[in-house]
Amino acid sequence: MRAIEIKQAGGPEVLQLCERPVPVLKAGEVLIKVHAAGVNRPDVLQRLGHYPVPPGASDLPGLEVAGEIVDGDLNGSPFKKGDMVCALVQGGGYAEYCAAPLQQCLPVPAGLSALEAASLPETFFTVWSNVFDRARLSGDETLLVQGGSSGIGVTAIQIATALGHRVFATAGSDDKCRACEELGAERGINYRTEDFVAVVKERTGGKGVDVVLDMVAGDYLAREIDCLADDGRIALIALLGGAKANVDLGQVLRRRLSISGSTLRPRPVAFKAAIAWRLQEKVWPLIEAGKIRPVIFKTFPLAQAAEAHALMESSTHVGKIMLQVDVV
Image 1 (spheres, one colour):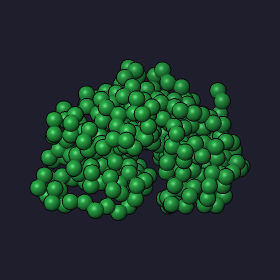
Image 2 (cartoon, one colour):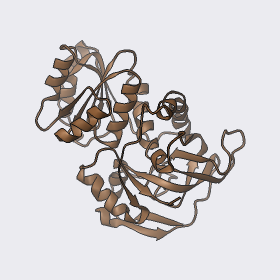
Image 3 (cartoon, one colour):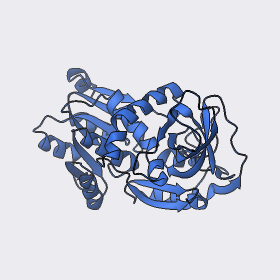
Image 4 (tube, helix red, strand yellow):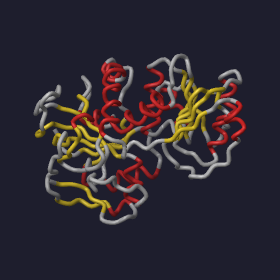
């Protein structure tokens, strides 16, 4: 099969088209003939040598795919060979065939293409796990999304808005802020020209937000604490702004604040299977009803994965960057 491999740690040019054997399935896996795959920030980190591959996972990049089930033990599952699914995987998505744990497969939502479905798993699993499971966003609570125009950001804005929450989002330009608002954010905040703490406080009558989804960290963390409501929670999922922070722990104590962090890739199949079940129950109906939609910025052929990574690193996109693997 054709695949994209990382020849060595480095820039986008180290992504090279190659021939690899079709994956040999392990117990509990299915083989997917890949139609499309998503490009995500962890793929870039892996290419740079900053995100080690979990033991037993494919060394090929790619954490989400959509395509046709062509092999695997499907006994007792709702799927059969020939079904179109999207799946979260530990690696191997940049290829014509990909092995995926059966329990991490979801049906392609009605009305979506394989390309659109492939844009869902990595960000939807991540957002649900962190915003709704770990940070427990519920009721009439409010959410601040850092990096609202990213793949994670557009997903968080749409899910939270569709479930009835007020959402604020930061982005790096006025155009990106408007894009966040078009997706449901009450207010897009240009972090280059505005103070997100001041805007959030003004919009919430001084209370602050209940949950912050943070992929920045660094010096943002102290400011996020300042804009949290009492009993507020920060869900940390990346360190784009740095791994060190100077924070006022007195506020954490006095106002019963919580800061949690997680990475999804190394978690066991059973953990991800539980997220898949909740997504199919809570979110897939919202997608099929048109209340949540895939946001795809640009699609590249598989052989142009390097160009896709260069676009990801430019941060000029809004939404997802995709690879078309098998044109159907």
